[in-house]
Amino acid sequence: MMRQLVFGGAALAMVLASPAYAETLQQALQQAYVSNPTITGARAGLRATDETVPLARADGLPNASVETDYTENLVVGSNNFVEPARQITVTPQVSVPIYSGGAVRNSIKAAKTRVDAGRANLRETESQLFTEVVGAYMDVIRDEAIVGLNQQNVHVLEINLKATNDRFQVGDLTRTDVAQSQARLAQARSDLETAQSNLIASRENYVRLVGAPPGELEPPPPLPLLPRSPDEAVQIALGDNPTLVAAKKAADAYGYDVKAARADRLPKLSLFAGGQYYNYFNSLEAVAGSSVPESGTAAQAGARLTIPLFQGGRPAAEVRQAQAYQSQAIEQTTAAERQVIDNARSDFAAWQAAEAVIKSSKAAVDADQLSLQGVRAENSVGNRTILDILNAEQELLNSQVTLVSAQRDAYVAGFALLAAMGHAEARDLGLAGGGLYNPLANYNRVAHNIWDFAEDPTPKPIASSTADTPAQGAEVHGSAVPALDSPVDNRPTSPAVTGG
Image (cartoon, rainbow, N blue to C red; front, side, top):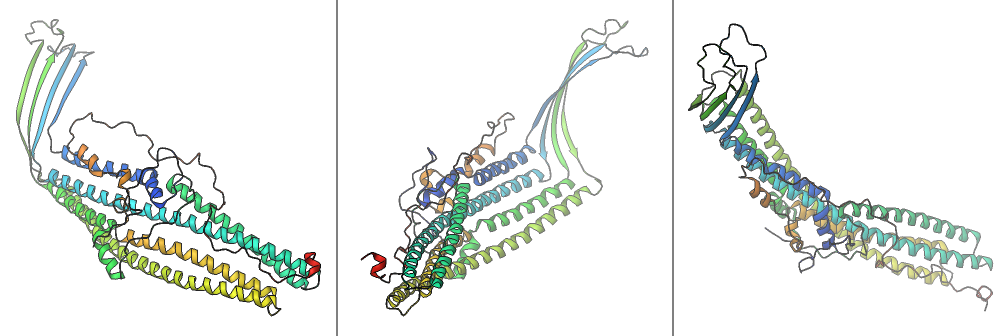
């Protein structure tokens, strides 16, 4: 079953003309897709794998060369009457393989199969990168919300401490109440410092993956329809997961290697042609009675049949080695299959669990808000203490932090589930508006290129550097966090305190 994940409806416009801050998840994914060094390096690695096809094909093509020798005979033996003092020899040669036992054919098949595996590995790299980007994006949103909640909590506790001190001055509260408020405020400030540190770390991780600092990030779009059961997730993953596809292709490639190795025991036939031009530069004139011409030409052509008789066991060892590698690849395919099944089921369970936590956390937030209102009301008539209010306030904060964390976890787990099923790649994410990398373009360019001087330009960096990116801070960009800015202690103070 094929499900596509499309973010935001319309095609994405590229935002790479300048290092603009990405504000939507789709923009962050596009930025990483174009400029992250992990994926640009993986593309270069696939281009290197593409070259194995023309390398294998070259063994079956004609080979032509010219060998030139120039010789100065510094000392000529006294019994050598026709040795020239100097000579030049030019020898052109052409060899055309006719039959190699299937070695070339199977080597080409193995190379093409490894290219297919490389493309699947590139898909897996895309999927892993996008999963990391989604996690980093959601981490920033979560940590911004947590910082906002803690900032408001500190503000509330500061107001509460002032009110507690005022009431202590008029004898309404004890020093214990003041100490409790001071301790809770100190703890809140410590929690805020930790939350700010986490936010800075999340933003720096975002910069590492995306290549630019996060701006005011928008909430992510809804994920598409996810599988209804772990069995459905596994079924899709077994057909589409790129890691499993790559492992199967690698095993197939080693099967062709076995056939290529067996060819070393078979006869080989080739045609050859050659010639020779020599010139003694009139250096034979001093040789008395010499009738040897000073220059001349020669040519030869024929067929060469090579029949291996004994090679010291090398062919058998090469076959056994290729078979062992094939066996290893088969086992690795089974291991990849197990891992894919594990990931699909685990990610499904994590997604379901996070969704359940969201539901319960929303109920907890509602209940804690109602509880806090009740405790404050009871405190105003003297039935509740300051500590009761502080505890209710802390419980509300904890439930709100749990909710925003669960929302992050559910989204990341859902996206990881899509990745495990093989549906979290550029073609699935609506990134075509910025142009998708086409691995076939390079393969088609080089696969049949037989020109010896067809080099590529000198490599230059593609991924963007983050050396000039400013260090990230912990400021909050207008996060939509639940309000906590009403005073904890709202019991009316006496006229002496208010100045009435």
